[in-house]
Image 1: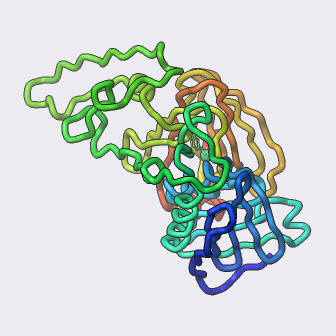
Image 2 (image 1 turned 180 degrees about the vertical axis):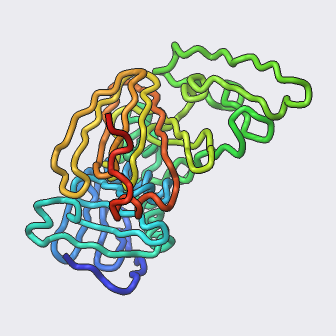
Image 3 (image 1 turned 120 degrees about the vertical axis):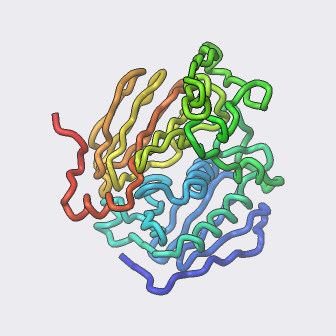
Length: 329
Ligand code: PHB
Ligand code: FE
């Protein structure tokens, strides 16, 4: 494995014959044509479909490299060290490791974030929204055609207080531009009635989470709706395939709120298959901290992702002070 020393800087190169710029980060090089994204490093090269690449890249940028590992597929991805990021090829792939073809560069977070954001902006064509389900967006393919910066720079709305309390964002509704998604037409839109003691009107709140989620225009994008110290409730709506294979650095809990998702669960470091988990509405699963997973949702579904955001957890797990699974039955 090669591990470079100094933090590399991103470089941008002139557009190719298809109109797309190429980019370098240290010894990694990224380019695209009409159908594919190409990644090169000193000991190898890799190709991915442009739409899958952009869907993964969109999440890595928007989530600030997320918890642990974001695998774009079985070969390339990033590891978040919360301040710096490893950009890797083959690092979590047993065959690449054995053949010593893997490559890792450790990069300051703002540097890799700026380059990734520039790739995402240049390679995303008008009409393609990497956060949308495939049925609800245009094509990622073809020669360069405009951009979709409005979609790719959208921010998740982070709750300042519990959703529904004064001072937080207004609840989504038809009037403020958040229609119910086509697949959630049957979701009850009634809001709960709250009768607070006089003087407590600003502190007691309640809202219909199903109605709220039924209006989400994006897929596979957990959003914080409540914070209790380091415990984050991050519900999300899912359709088609989670565009990344997430390698955990902590356990996370899934509560399947509606419909059904199938999860492929693999060993985090080698990609060896570990389990297939079919979650139906009402099912709860704890994903251990030594796995990676990718979900498949044939119909748009609602999932609650429950995370503990503590910065201490990865170290407690890697030093063996915390178990990899959060519960023993
Ligand atoms: C996860 O990796 O746990 C994850 C990511 C995005 C989602 C759901 C789950 O939408
Ligand atoms: Fe995960």
